[in-house]
Length: 138
Figure 1 (cartoon, rainbow, N blue to C red):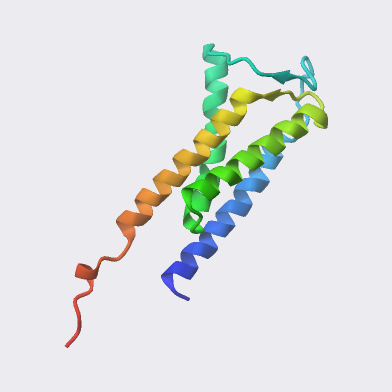
Figure 2: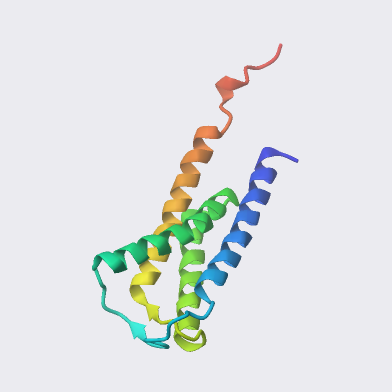
């Protein structure tokens, strides 16, 4: 198995685990139901909400890491994270009890995946073998 094949396999595994964890965390019914099935479009910059945005972003970082390791380009990773985030928010809006959809969550989720993608790409670039590391054999 080549290094590229191994990285791709690890990336796909990370992607699958990330999607399962995201689904488990975001699509389980909330223990509270004070704003069930509502859509919030306005941005809330309160400390409590910004903390929640940070946690949302952290939840999507592994998705970006997996996408980069699997070899997805940045725009495909952006498309994947946006699609997954829109799906989660749509399900929270229509199906999941005690949850509500927010545009701000979509922004935080996609930002988290983008951060994960860039971190992974930087780490992969630093760990890639260089030609100077393997001098030609005589």
